[in-house]
Image 1 (cartoon, rainbow, N blue to C red):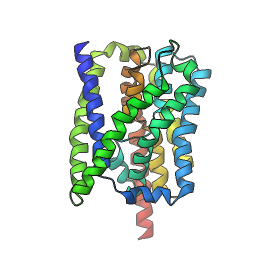
Image 2 (cartoon, rainbow, N blue to C red):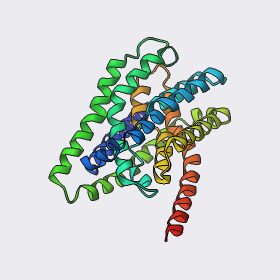
Image 3 (cartoon, rainbow, N blue to C red):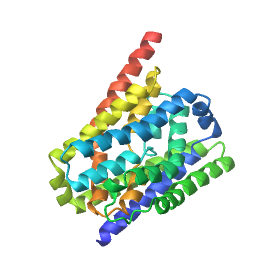
Length: 285
């Protein structure tokens, strides 16, 4: 139990540093890209905050999923945003769109997660102890504060902010991975029990989320790829905050397991989209 607590603290601490790094590597210009393109912004938010959660709700309603898995699926579905991925996504295309989407999604999570908690209350919390307002306060403190600190630090480091952000993302991303793998190792029985239908369900959900983002990403191949991956890679930090106050302790472990299951789907997709982008560049030349 002590190791589990320490690893969970490590995950939460590394997520806060990742959010700080995102803020440090961002600028107001990144937000302007999406704000000046309301159609793309609307499609992006619709895909991440509405369509993906509705797809998860449909799975929970119509598939015979174990309670812990159903809970984890819903928690992941309402946890939009992917601060772990901005630099990876940038390899596929538009840097301003990716960073703007990460920043906006992290801010909106403070409102959208509690709103979904109200709507999904009967599915998420049968004990009645999950209070949306309390979750909003926790998310605000966990994500808004580090993000604002990172943006403020960018003002003092205008020339080195992006470079420092990359370094922090690499180092803290490694710490996050180690803590996640450690948590899986300690609770390997839960993962073993999840083999079969649960893992297939998590992979299937990732495929559906990729498809939603891909279809709603618009005509630009780079934007389409970025939104697809952002939809499929949910905000694990937000999910952990919600999972910490849900009645089933196995939910947090299954959320970490989702990182592995989703990687099985996302990595091939990224390679495919990378090849598509390369072919497109060669044709333009």
